[in-house]
Amino acid sequence: MKLEPIFHPPAEAEINERLKRVQARMAAEGLDRYVAFSPHNIYYLTNFANAVHERPFVLVVPRTGRPQFVVPQLELPHVRSRAVGDVELVSYFEFPAPAGRAWSDQFKALFNANERVGIESICPFQVYAEVPGDRVCIDIVDDVRMVKSDYEIGRLVYACALATDAHNLLLGCARPGLSMAEISGKARGAVMERLVRDNPTINPFATRVTVVFQPASVSHDPHNFTNIDMRMEEGGPHVSIVNAEMNGYGAEVERTFFIGHVPEAAKKPFEIMMEGRRIAFETARPGELMSEVDRRVNEYFRRAGMGDRLLHRTGHGMGVTGHEAPFFAEGYDRPIEKGMCLTIEPGVYIKGVGGFRHSDTVLIGDEGPVTLTGGPLELEELTLPLRA
Image (cartoon, rainbow, N blue to C red):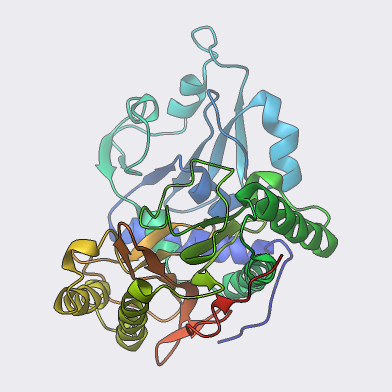
């Protein structure tokens, strides 16, 4: 398994191999065509990323042959400049449009009578209603995306290295009074500078860099980032978050850290979180059910008296986004496979004390997780000095 960083766009052979995997799954499911609407799935199969609004972009994949991409005429030069692989562009003039010239007229003409057509579960009804034939709700592209190619692994290695650098910058600047706006702007700027230096033609529609933190007064509420003026405080626990898409590939690294000292009430929960993390790393091996990883972590947390302090699963997938399937979650009984990329991030949350969570992006290797992100882990390392 190669772990060399890659930051160049995919070659046509890479895109073709992804298409073959999708078409093989279509054949196994008895599908004649597959309709992809998700911008992330379209990006995965074409290398084209865009901000989709009211004008539909729809990719139609036949069981054999090249895909057909229904796009606004306005976007034809844009698609041609970014798309990789052999894809037929089928354009329509505008949305809305007169009868006979609408996107749906061009779209429906791509199908033969009485075909069996797979449609993504997130496909909007606007598109679903226009699909002729026997419609089957199935998420083939999402499923194929779960196991990464060597090229994708290289892209993830690169993204994780940049995310780690951004997170180290955050920890290196940590001091009481530092605002989220200040550190977010500084760290995001450093990441963007590196991305553009390595590849001046990065796609801004496939790039998103989030660098945030929560002080102890908020960190018990793990998705509350509603105040851009949140500031670091003496003590903790603070929870830092870097979650990003680096020109089309995701990365995440998070830590629980303290400034100056560790409050007594925070020491035991930190130890419990770390043991839950150890259990997750130990359990996440090829062949094990993903649900079993989460079940063992949650079982330990409940034994440790944290059963009512659980708010989320143990981890989620990474790929062309920073948050996707598969999931380390009870009820998700899919076997772990070599080549999957996920986060490991069990956490506990105590109002009045704070949140406790480390997150790393890992690649599943032959023997288990290989960590792609980095940074300090132990309490001593994450008790940062007071800075003016």
